[in-house]
Amino acid sequence: MRTVIKPFELVVPATVDQALSLLDKHKERAMIVAGGTDVVVQLVEKTLAPEIVIDISSIKALDYITEKDGAITIGALTTHTSLERSPLVKQKIPLLADAARDVGSAQIRNRGTIGGNLVTASPAADTAPPLLALAAKLKLLGAGGERVVPIEEFFTGARKSVIKRNEILTEIQIPIPANGRIGTRWLKVGRRNAFTISLVNTAVLMSLDRDKCRSVRIALGAVASTPMRARKAEEFLKGRKLDEATLKEAGAIASSETSPITDIRASAEYRREVSAAIVRRALQEAGTSRS
Amino acid sequence: MDRKIAIKFELNGEAVRAEVEPNMTLVDMLRDHNLFGLTGTKKGCAQGECGSCTVLLDGKAVNSCLILAPQVNGRKVMTIEGMGTADALHPLQQKFVEHVAVQCGFCASGMLLSAKALLDENHSPSEEEVRTAITGNLCRCTGYTKITQAILDAAEKA
Figure 1 (tube, rainbow over the protein chains, first blue to last red):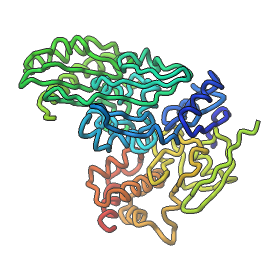
Figure 2: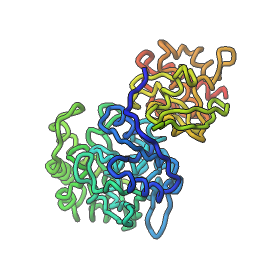
Figure 3: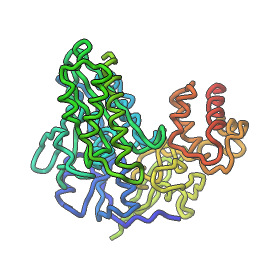
């Protein structure tokens, strides 16, 4: 039986500028599709019913991973598979490669893009916590020009972000962590070991001074209406030795900062408990890793 | 307004054309008896969660239920029909038969194409790599053991 999607007109711009003109021309009647792994599902489920769909998936100019001036710059159409395999990402910002590897399945990763993952803005998005821990910046392009938004300011609610209707996310900029000894860890908990939506996920980036935490960024996903930072836990850990008691307390503090919901996948209570556990574990493993 | 789009692409090694409405998914276009009639590709969930609709797009495994038909314009698509025939089984298909890795058969098309994508890239995968490669293909019958063994066996023989 045919899958029923409400009819729409498809346009396929060859360049970003053409895509922007189309967005300006058609306004709220139009929306963008890239890899389609979120958008097509929503078209099928009828949560989205645009009159015009702008297919940007062939714009090669937005598919790149480069290193420039101490930062990794990633085009928004870079697939999760590309991120997972990129020698540059694996070497300099492995947190992102680890998370990309855990997105969906190989089939999803071969189509899904980092830009799409961010703009869909699911609270459980797997690429968001690493980017929060890495203090990434997002480049948004509109007819009026370009703006750069720090990722902490990008998400505004479940499936909501600051991106405007006539803007396209073009690039993700990630400063390469370079403050002495850095330890990172990505952890994801789902209902099964693979091909699963995160119940709780975490990305930790720690700057170490021998056995002490100099500073740390702890990001969590699927435990609030947006991906979040556990800032109280981060503050608590500054300058502290990473012994068992400290790690346990840091996990508990991080958990107290979450505001998870109970949904079809897990209860809020479970998510609170698991946040404490995986933050503790991620901190421990980041603290003992070598970079 | 006629929304139909004329597309040209390569399907199982052959240059083909079609005129499709953009709200048609790739899996529907492939299976439609008025278009390509290739029903080897299955439709299990229509939302990218089961992998039975897996095809190869430019050599990479993808869920064809999540691709709008016009998005294959200018690309190469391979379905299970392009992998082998009853008279000339692909080595992977042969191994699936030998290992009894098929029960109801519904996951098999997608499973074989995911396996093919893996072996085309990685000639001697570890068991872990095989299992990772097929995580996007759900099987309700076999428990994956014989499927994994068939793929490992096919890799060795290649």
